[in-house]
Image (tube, rainbow, N blue to C red; front, side):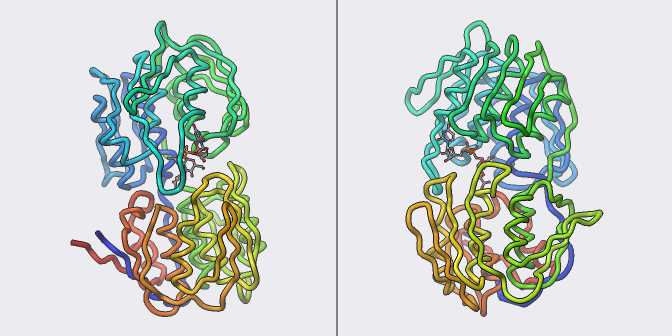
Length: 422
Ligand code: EPZ
């Protein structure tokens, strides 16, 4: 297994290009199942999760070809489709459950393995099941697989979700676009990835209104056609790299960044003493003056503070002046990075969904272990600000969501290298 070595090297300067969003692309790719015509995705990120989704779609009968060094994904699904998403692929990546809605819409039936839990939480699928059942699907769990069928096809319906789940909103959207009649989804998720999916589906001929708000209305159509769609910028990669100059000084411009993607996050950065300036090409970030100030953070669905930036924010607050309280309200087990940061000299107390972070003057390099995607990059950020050398192991987690980290950070002056594993 590869590991990454980071040596604290002072302030960073330069530009970091931000890629297309992993979490948008993972929802856009299954949309190819909704039409017999090709769907081309541009500005696609080059990540192991995208390769896993490619593998899954291929196992269902779709074709996905990476062009232009993988930045363009040409997808099509005009042949025979098998409705079974196998456990051996689904267990590698939860987002595989995003084929359930499109398969049901296209074929009227689907057999999708339940992904099971992951490091950050149990992650059940009850909200997905309720939402698709509202459209007339009958879904039962058998031998670890969800067996779903909609004899006579899906029917439009009004449905209110008990929680604004991102994945369930995406599955409902991709099912309702081919359902008979009108569907209204209440308490829908409002994330930019949902807006991007709705835009892509509209480019394919779908009739959708209200994406980005809590109420989305979908008028079902008989068929969808092909389209070309640019994947939205990755707001989580953006936020991650905005924290690099914040944690170790200097000034970095994140190319492709927009404030609207990270507003609540920018409010917290401002309170912590970090300035963010929108430029013609992105977001320029630097510390205002002196040490970072402590701030309290609560993770919430968009437009609240994103849970996917909580670990990275903890790394910053571990170096702040004063005590910060971080409350994780989305996932029940998302503080696994805390003990690793404590190996680097951070002072953190975790109690249930709350972490109290007493800032220290300086972190110290150490050998640490990545436990999940966002935890892994928070350790790299901490290593950038630490004295000495930090060795982060199990970086396969990182490769799921960050392309070419060493190159991007190395280009702005970080001392960082990957050590190939056995
Ligand atoms: C998406 O996951 C993202 N993944 C996650 O990013 C992100 O953390 C999450 O949204 C929240 O923003 C992708 O888009 C591929 P949810 P998703 O359904 O759709 C519970 C990353 O680091 N829930 O909004 O799975 C669930 O357990 C990843 O890139 C149910 O109880 O998130 C969780 O506690 C990690 N029942 C909460 O809701 C359900 O049926 C939010 O889940 C569905 C969800």
